[in-house]
Image: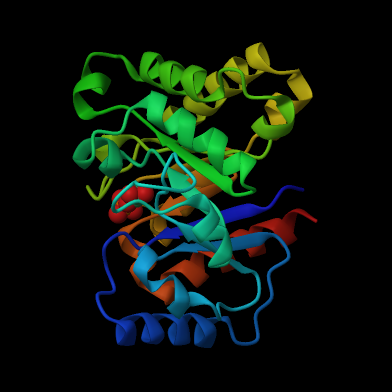
Amino acid sequence: MPPFYVIGNLKMNLLSREECDEYVSQLRREMTGKTFAHARGIIAPPVIHLNRFQHLPPGFTLAAQDMSQETKGAFTGEISPLMLRDAGVGHVILGHSERRMYAGETDELVALKTRLALKENLVPIVCFGETEEERRRDETVAVIERTIRTVFSGLSSLFAERVIVAYEPRWAIGAGVTPTMTDILQVKVYLRKLFSELYEPALAERIPVIYGGSVKAAVLPSVSWEAEMSGVLVGGESLYPRELIKMMSEAEARFNSQD
Ligand code: PGA
């Protein structure tokens, strides 16, 4: 059975080294006595604090919130995927809606970054989703199709199956509201259809699809397993280690009950 990802995007929070150390200690405390065979934790701290997150509990890996589409050179302010690898990062969030909104990132740029991340041995977590306005205009499928076709265009099967895709309706991010289970499931079904146009059906089934946008433990069943998602991308609630571990424990318990 494929793993269930619980990915914490800490965004631009935890402002000091002390706050980071406290966060990691809490995470370790909450994990005491627990082991997860199925639930996988991934934490994406602000890049400047990566070194404070080197001692995550077993079962956790480190992610970055973004990276450059270049590897080296005169790119002021950018972070190379090689630097991320060197800092122990295994995953990288790409095309998050806040990057699209505040830094003008496009699907084309996200496609470039995805390719480079894969080449440099990082697992890309590619985010996409419709705005409130696009949803009202019934353009959800069109938006998803555009991103997926752009990002996966020309991507070999070998690379494609290493990507994690994160459906994050922009209107749900930080809003305290989530789509219905049926809405998310419909997106999943559509993605499977699209992937099976681009790749052989068995591979199309294997690409993990996760959900993000106002995720907390209480909505986990409807936005994840009932909607057949392979994990969740958690923003606000990931600032509470206890809540993240709670979500992982619930995913693990569900997995065990299916054994
Ligand atoms: P949220 O953020 O959980 O605070 O809605 C999700 C995200 O930005 O990925």
